[in-house]
Image (cartoon, rainbow, N blue to C red; front, side, top):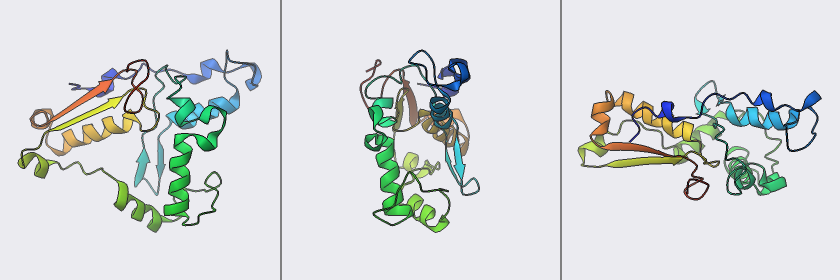
Amino acid sequence: MISNPAACTAAAFNPQSLRCPGGADSGDACLSDAQLAVVNSWTTPAVFANGTYRNAGWALRGNEDDPAAWPAWVTGAGNVRVAGQYLFQDTTVKNYLARNPVADSLAYVPWDQDRVALDRLAALNDASDTDLRPFKNGGGKLILWHGLNDAAVSDLATTEYYQRVIAALGGQPATDEFVRYYLAPGVNHCVGGPGR
């Protein structure tokens, strides 16, 4: 069980140290400025609607090149429109936010332009309630786990949720009575990866 999930995350890493000379794409030994922009976007928390909605961002774990990691979820192995994250985004924009089946989700900005649509989406999909006392009082037991190479859903967001549950329930001892949280190094989304 992880009592301090933050202590289990990768050490701080500066992606700028991988910048190609002049920022131009000069091969696989370094990152161009465009590639660094993707890394920075990926690892930076996204906050919109005046802080109401937040995505924790992802940590770089060193296994991003696993075929079921960035190629499947972020880059689409060269075709971003087949990447899992694009499919999430495209469905969200077309069906929830723009409510337009021909909307171009890559051009849809800013994400918080329709607050009513965001709130409607959150009401349908968010699982962020940290008051688990009714669940606990009903005899429930909860196991949370997250693969540290998951490119679909951020383990940092799951860790933040777990930490908010601890705070809402009055501390670690009260939470430990019915919740356990495990981090699986090298495991992709649900299964696979070098950590399998």
